[in-house]
Length: 364
Image 1 (cartoon, rainbow, N blue to C red):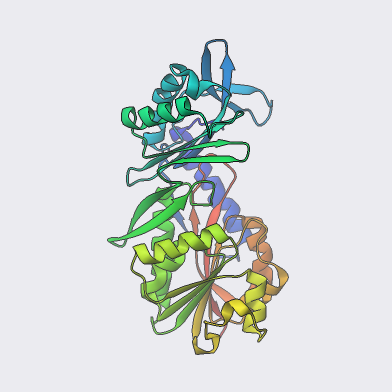
Image 2: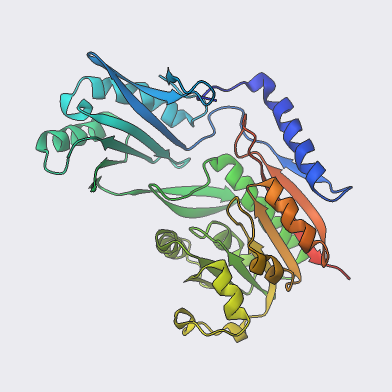
């Protein structure tokens, strides 16, 4: 889509997504829809940089023609990124140290006002004092909180490699560290609605006396927001960076009933079946009374072992980024569970991507 937005077409494309999701869910399932702002919604953006003579500019490549397209502004990006883009490129064009062999510019912003810019080069920058001085000036002249310089086998930090987002849900503020090059929800407006829906499922259907287990927890996005709805929460994640970020977020949100362990979903299945893991020596699995399981798998959906494991829980909260693999997984899960509620979260307007949530309960 190359950064274009079409607000007049937004509702039509959303309706198509709803129809597609409903066709994949059990008949008569009502889908609650959480729309996105029709423009200025992405908190992440990446652009290649093209050099022609004395001018450099952002480009993207057309998905069909594969041709480069100049991009000066990006109304898909949140307003802070969209406004910064031309100012930053003007500064780059005016400074040889910033411009020389610059290959790509990445933006990571927050609703809370922080901005991280990554400048990626095809030359060494670590020992370049002129580049370092230029970056220091950038931060005083433009609304940039942090700058990262990257080159082959080099990563130069100017302050920090993360921003701190603050999301408001149910009149509560949740704090999340978002690390450069790590997965975070790109549409913070819809992310707030996703957390609100998940909290609503717990509040409406569970009594708050049981425990929650979450697989694929990332930086603790859902676990932290749901912690006050359960007695205790045990969450697992395989990425070392995400686990470290989750620990940061647990402390920042002063959550005391959440434990994060670095394990793959398949290993969790084995551990719950009785297999011993050194990483679980400090975790007394037998002391948990899991009332629900939350899964937020990658696009491939659940593996065979995990798909079977989730059916052992009374309630299942399934967050999906791929409706086709969700439908495949539900074929198995619906043998033991019924869908109570479903939702569509329009994280990615003007694309075919669908983010959805399904809340299930074991059959009577």
